[in-house]
Length: 65
Image (cartoon, rainbow, N blue to C red; front, side, top):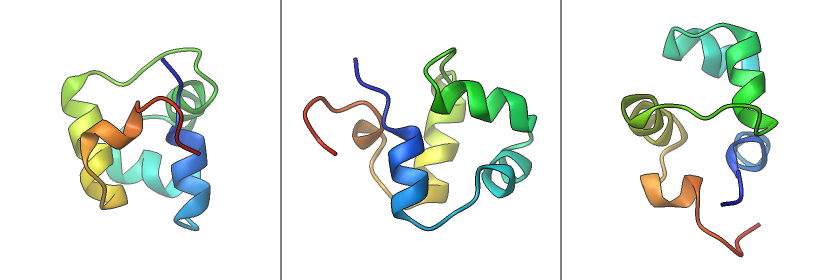
């Protein structure tokens, strides 16, 4: 499964620390998601998709960049 969080955040012109704060997670936790060290849980994925204005599926779809 390809991690697209970092790509999508950059594509939207957002800052990782801003998203982390809005989601109530540390900057390091969000950075780990962006680097595929760890992954958000289901609720966090839902929150992230809402913040980015995308369907949840776009966070993990293969072949998109």
